Image 1 (cartoon, rainbow, N blue to C red):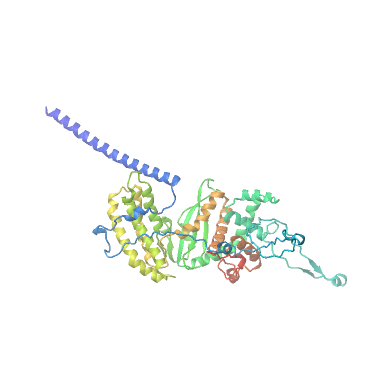
Image 2 (spheres, rainbow, N blue to C red):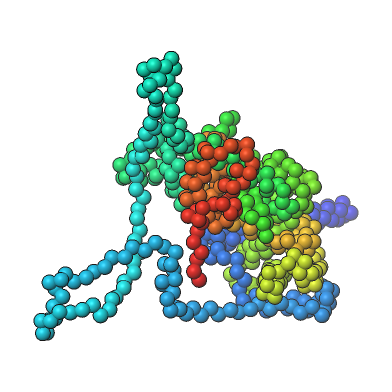
Length: 531
């Protein structure tokens, strides 16, 4: 009897243990299913939904500060979202104002003398008024051959009577690419078409054929590599030196495929790193091609730099010495936005925890907008003081909220990832309070790397390491030119005309060619846009 009872008890214990194990497995599977559903919904939204990260107005009604334990300062008023309605009025002469920076060709249409007869009485008519119709005429690219004929002179008397005959040669511009058909304008045009307009070389090859010019894409590639490595690199090196003299920079990186890298497969990922200056200084944007995403690359490129560096959450920047990293609130907000988009359709998103996290971020960005509205030509000191007064209480409340929510949320969910990201990055996310020149996000870097990302969609990959390095140099020059309000095509043409004429060791002469130089010709500048 006792033996039978022991057997039953043993069976019950085994079943209970088995049941507990199955329960754990079920919970794990449910969590995995929930995670996969989140990933699927987020993937569907990225593929078919709107790309905007703007907050739904309904989300702005959340009572985030109604709990005493997370209230940092009860006297601080919550910022409200302004609703702005734009009403556009067409001003008188608006069309003419848009055309005022363009050259004008005037064509007059008059009656022939024999036609200047009144249809009623047969008398002579006179001109009483005119009517003007304006059109925009676009002149497509034209290709022509320019022959440079260098004349050589000698003395006839010395030829007849002298032992030596001196030769005098007329001066002729140094070719931009010796023993080739490339001119300054042609090289600039090819670069502009690819790196500004996003036209791959194979399409340019076909376009030139329609002009009656037969140049292979290999020839065009050689032109660009030569122009970048032999000429534009001079400006690139100088801009690099000046970049490191700043104490506030931004950085970002993106992938790049290079087909012919020694020892690597054609589908291997390489990287294009981007570094740029911050606000209130002449814009400098530099790209740096590297084969990996290793931390040694920013360490090498930023050698000698001391100050603040705006970055995202990538750990590759953490090993930089004498550099304080500034976190990006746009990335933090994006994490919560992804968590919100990953929620099932039947969930009330306006009252969700993800929406609460977004609202905290929205308040910080709203304060930045308030600074711009409150202070005309805001100084760094004013910005810092306003942030300490208004942003710091929000940050304190947000941190308390994060610590409260963290134990309540599955860490591998999208919301868990957002909360973990903010907590892990917190020491960097609050650095913007230290200096009024710092920015709340790294959007400045993202905007600067976007032209490369968009161009990559057109030309897909680089053929060689030389091509990738040349691309980095060219992108650096054209993007810096654009931010300094220069026309990239005209500016590149000007550079290729001037660079062969200067001493490349003359720093002052090089500085005169930099995009922000006051000596850049007016034709290189973009005309002021009439509002």
